[in-house]
Image 1 (cartoon, rainbow, N blue to C red):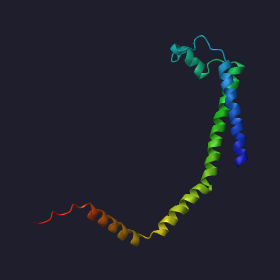
Image 2: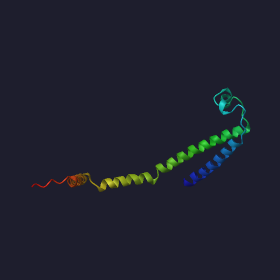
Image 3: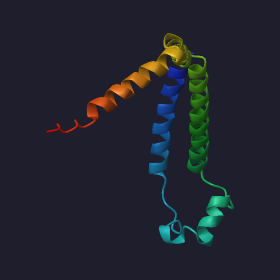
Image 4: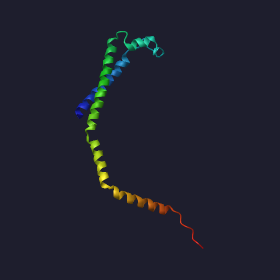
Length: 129
């Protein structure tokens, strides 16, 4: 599974670089400025009213592949970690620490610690004359 994740990660980096290049080489439209971001011209572009150029279509498909690879890698990573030894090791360490210190011996030791701390912190009584 590690080889598959490595291969898909490499493909994701290549797709990421390609997507960045595709976005950078596209020419901006005249009405696609920040002032028209929520106006009528940009809404037609966002909703697909007109047919895009080949470059726009390739950018959309590359973005879809990028999103799909991200989701696939997240899923594969989650599967790898859920069945991995990290969670099992934590569970075993907790069970070993609970078994090492029984509850009946922990309470008197804690009480003795509290008593010795309180007696050391108490001020000495003044001497009588």
